[in-house]
Length: 235
Picture 1 (cartoon, helix red, strand yellow):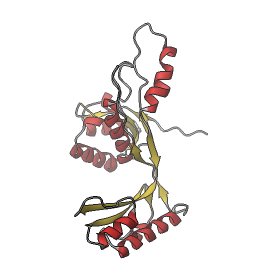
Picture 2: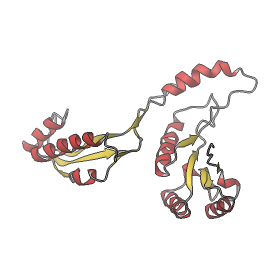
Picture 3: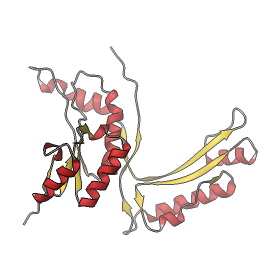
């Protein structure tokens, strides 16, 4: 027998999230397509409200099945790039609430127009404006302050050499992105002053993380790794 999970837009019950949850549970619905609370769209909720929402949902055992975003709910002729920051925020919220899906729209076309006329614009032009990279990874971050101009900062080894020569100072840190494993937190070195030793420790940590990627006890949670913005040309 197939098993179906029923979810709903809770804000059609009430603007109050607690009341949304109470009515959902009374009707044996345990998944929310989160669109708004307190009359405010989820994309516009401040951090404190998002934390409060997460606490309520977790405490009541309610999962977020999707982020009910308004992304794409604009005219096909409207400028698209202002939508980019909201799109990025939507992806961040999906991760924050562990939501596997995002509700989106496919733009409004002028009344009476043939949808086929705009297909290439949506699939190629607008799609090309969202070069988003999603996945997991490891990142070595160097936060530096330079003491002279024209220093070679093209890689970790030149940076370490410049630090050793007294041309810069700062810290180096290893970040794991979307990789969750009980043993990895003990492997990661703390942020350290940039020098040969801290560089070696960072590289060893990267190798250890890579070795854990395919471990059956390692949980991989895709993140937005990069979004490239492009200048919009107004004709």
